[in-house]
Length: 269
Image (cartoon, rainbow, N blue to C red):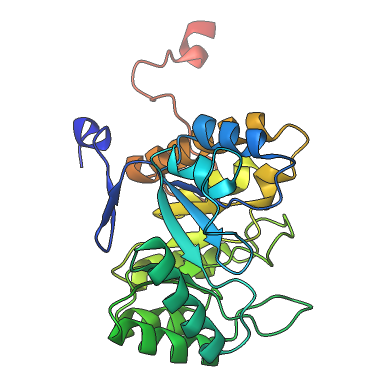
């Protein structure tokens, strides 16, 4: 890829083609005006919606759905709050009927304490939904084998966590994310645990195709400013990944060439 090609770098996920590689969640913002300003400043083109927590039928100018539809941003409904494959499948079916989209962010949580995904139930739900024609975006652990199995089932991407949901701890296992990028052929979207712009940049430098952020922006002291920072961090991280960083060495390497260096010993004589 040359410099000219990096300026035209769209992301293809299933049937969706977008240019922004920063996705935003829509919960926890102090008010709707702040949310809309964050979406606009981040230049995101895809937002997630918690189907069980959003009034999908209220679409006036004062409702979340009404305001979001004015932004010309793609929706990625999710199954947040589901603890079994059966719950997740039903929620996905309801979201498709209400929003007229086959895209679904599949979340099946294992327990209330860690909010870690239940990998067994996740695989069950993914298999059912893919057979029903859904484009499944699975939220999963940073397990390389699990990601490969989700891809083998037909998921259009994988969404491994950086660290627990809402923790802001950043990337806890960069090596695993690197392995996932090497092993799977679909887009890798780092989801959950991003705390600040440097975390998002690191995820992109490791080879992630996109980053999904919610709490880090919504709960920041200045959410709109953090949305700006996340936008720039994702762009910078992507460019750094494409630029191919230098090799890491265990020793110093002089950047000044030896040619033309005066022989000070002879001059002294």
